[in-house]
Image 1 (tube, rainbow, N blue to C red):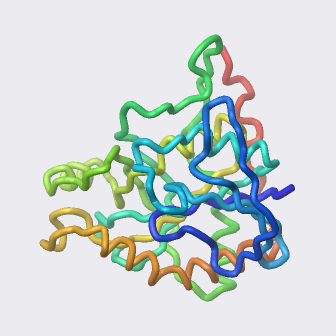
Image 2: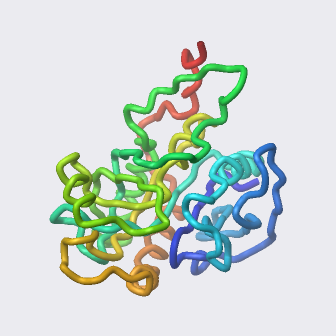
Image 3: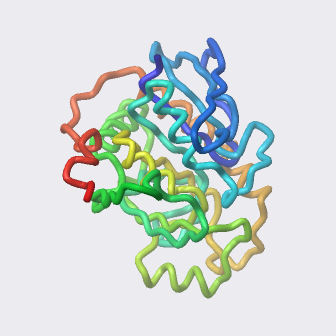
Length: 261
């Protein structure tokens, strides 16, 4: 069974170089995931890939069944998930084409199912550090092997969508300390933590956020920028999956310890 999972966002509907060996349609207690999970091998490592918006990109960010997607990975035996997605750059270093590995996240979404514990159990997981430290270090090591520059920290602010933000909202997000804005980082990260899975994000800055460049924002720009970054993402993933890196032990697998009331 694959131990590593990859979630692909806008413009990344498959993994270049992934040799598909099968597909799994998973039924979950929370409904259907976004698509079938494509099982394959990359650099000798078995991987499960899921296009977040569906192969035809027909699922809007606020309608994605995040619980089913994350649950399905666990059903497949996945213990570590990389989430790739597009984001708009807010702070200075976040230029279009940049690859960022965020270290913090700010949740501005509403109406999404953001926990597996809605009924008889009360669970408060520690989310001080929302992304797995071990996976992040492994991404950094892979980027060095591949000769790629990645920005090693940044705060991702997640909004509901599907509309893009106003210039005033982006100014406010900047004051709050956000470096980039996207629509899918939450509740993916917290749901993975509740299932004690390691989870890290890789954000491709596809455009400047509203009001920064003075230009009109378009979905064409997002998709084209993501396609342009595909080769870099491919090289990063190949390096990531090719080598076992010595990384510090993380606590993701013990997230529920002392978290239940």
